Amino acid sequence: MRISNRFITIEGIDGCGKSTQAEMLSDWLSLRFGKNKVVKTYEPGGSGNEIRNILLNSSMSERSELLLFLADRMEHVQNIILPALCENKWVICERYIDSTIVYQSFGRGIPACEIERLFAWCEFPVPQLTIYLDVPVDVAVSRVDSRGNKDRIESVGIEFIRKIYSAYKQLSIDRKRIVRVDASLDIHKVADSVRNVLEERFELKS
Ligand code: TYD
Image 1 (cartoon, rainbow, N blue to C red):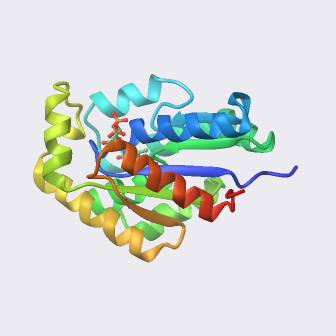
Image 2 (image 1 turned 45 degrees about the vertical axis):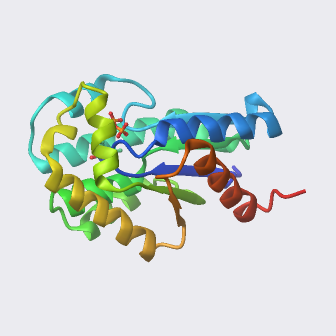
Image 3 (image 1 turned 180 degrees about the horizontal axis):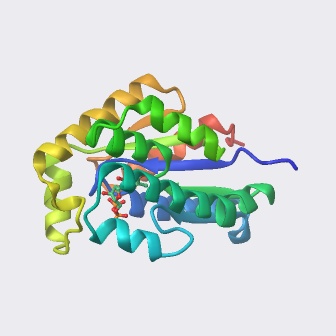
């Protein structure tokens, strides 16, 4: 079975504009390759809301939280991501393995090597490209606040969010797969930057 490498993830702190950019990117790819060649999805909950609801609304130990994120991902990979990649589709996913490293390791303190071992055991496919949307913490926090309805993780406070911000920054330096995009600009400018990264990485310029 051949699996395509058109797997792109979008990462960043809460309020960085992932959903908007994922939408704009998948619209652009759909225009170019056809709507049926693009799958836009997200975590947690991309293949069902049961585990997502528990994760965002109940309190639990760090390890239970990690295992639930992984269970959610396993279903998502098996039911949505792998079938789409096998059909040579583009997959645009908001949050994926880097969210787990950032939130559960840097954020909650579980050693990254233990999490990486679990990723390997789960045989999660590694994205070809990860776009990291970098916005300053204060901008992201005011966006999240203006949405009103904070979930459990968003309610943990500014210090936690700062920790997450630094973790993303570090990860984007350490891993070549991750490309940092300045997401504090106007959304259309950010979308242009994201497209430029894709055109370069996937040699799409005609
Ligand atoms: P969500 O409402 O989807 O927020 P956002 O719009 O910012 O993506 O909530 C997802 C939350 O789950 C977010 O705070 C990050 C967290 N998360 C983890 O802690 N670990 C993970 O592996 C994933 C995928 C998400």
